[in-house]
Image (cartoon, rainbow, N blue to C red; front, side, top):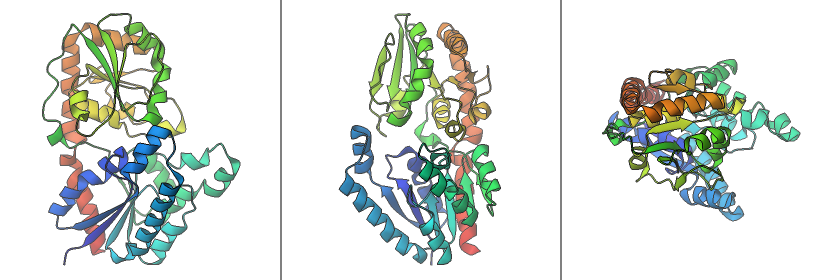
Amino acid sequence: MKEKIFFLTKYAKNGASSRYRSFQYLPIIGKHGLEYEVSTLFSEEYLIKKYKNRRAPFFLTLYLLMRRLFSILRASNYSVVVIEYELIPFFPAIFEWLLRYRGCKLIVDYDDAIFHRYDVHKFFIIRILLKNKIYSVMRSANIVVVGNKYLANYAHSAGSKQVELIPTVVDLSKYPVLKSNFQSNIFNIGWIGSPSTTKYLYSIAPALVHMCKNDNVIVTLIGAESIELPGVSLKIIPWSEENEIECLSSFDVGIMPLPDEPWANGKCGFKLIQYMASGLPVIASSIGVNKEIVDDGVNGFLSDSNEQWVEALEKLYENVDMRAKMGGVGRKLIESKYCTNVTGDKMAQLLTGLTKN
């Protein structure tokens, strides 16, 4: 009889963290002889309505929470339970503790510093009640899987039994063609993200305005909410899984601005990984894991001040060959470290090993 894994993800496939931390590994673990079932907390409908209206309908949220409670009750029927982040946000770790009490083997997975959602929350009561929630969840799990060293250090400080670093990666079979058609007649500065991270673009608005004084410069945003950037030639494209990679291939450079704050230090640099998989040069803030992914001046640039952003953008604007060379170097990095060809077997082995313990 095959061992069966129960994935309790936060989102359906239209949620990036769940799509890349869980769903893309399912075919791989299946090839390793493991059966699996997935139960999402927030459905596709929920995420669409939340991004459209900035909040989801009350009764839909209530239904989804009840569905999660039912999944928790069934979890002890599975060999291993994989939890993305936490079982129920903004609720004490009672249900995680209940699963361990019932003998469930738990893997918890993090690609964001969600503990900062609680320990630096603006409301005092949240900080008091939940600041140690994720600390407790990590300590009780059999294995903690994290996307970067910042998260790994937190897990170790929590006294986690086993911590495994697996970056958020891409399936290279979906990125088969290197960017090869860099042109000098247009310069497309590209960004991909979600409505919640669009705000980070304001920090580099002066550099974008400066570049858009050139008539052949445009800024393309995939998945952004409506944003006002006066003086910027802006094009906003709704995100979809079907058009994501095609849109990325239209970029000439991929950008990732971040503020220097605790939450940003927990980011896993996935935008950069997508850009590099597409054969693009990148420009990023020198925050957290960005400093590991970007080899400054080799596969992209690390920039913090407005002057540095302008200088990096101008270099790539003026030099088509530099774009191609940096993009090629970045692609090789993804092939060697940041793709499922590298991480897939490790993830499957973690699951297989835990089922046998």
